Image 1 (tube, rainbow, N blue to C red):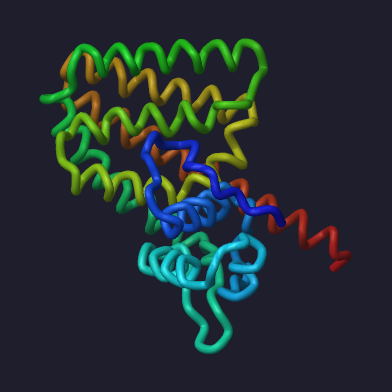
Image 2: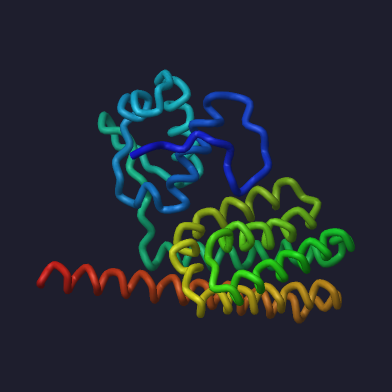
Amino acid sequence: MTWNLKINRFTNRNLDTLTDQVYEGLRNAIITGEIPGGTRLVESALAAEMKVSRTPVREALHRLAVEGFLYSVPRSGYIVVEMSDYDIEDLFTIRLAIEQLAASLAIEKITPVELKEMELNLKKTDEKIENGQTEGMTELDVQFHGIIYKATRSRTLYHICKSLSDHSLKYRIALIHLPEFAKKTRDGHYQIYTALVEKRKDKLERAIHDHLVLAKQDILKMLEQTRNEMFFSEGI
């Protein structure tokens, strides 16, 4: 596998240290599914493959473990966490509560410029759906929610929301190329955007609830279908 040490394509942050670059490269590979759940990561092997010393790799792996992307196996390295149906349910229950809190703050503080960014985001999404394109859909999804997180004007809440969103990202990436799911995502975003423009808290709360519940249901269906396909492909 070739590891990507470039700056995280989902953010505009500058990465100043080698540890940051290794961390972002590994994190991106995990959340996009390039490194699947259950994969064993060994410090020495990663350092050799990435052509860096073991120190930044060790620090990056520790950070990923603290964030819940990996768990440590004594004397064996780290294992990429693989989420069960229960984990998905748990993640989206928490994400729903946190994102509704974020939206309740954002609706009071979001600026006309940020609303214009959301409108442009929706237009770009529509263009991709109409043209049957999937490239860039994930980035547009991340950007849309990111505007709301930033509009809370809370650094702590922003990082909590983004962390929870990232934990479900690889599953959304697997679905976003499907026209039906892409349209559902776009429709959910439009309902959220409209509620923010109208400053309707009740409508916004309902829109976020429906959007995340549909996403959760689609992810669970995808995982069930994948398991069934694996079961029959093994000839059991």
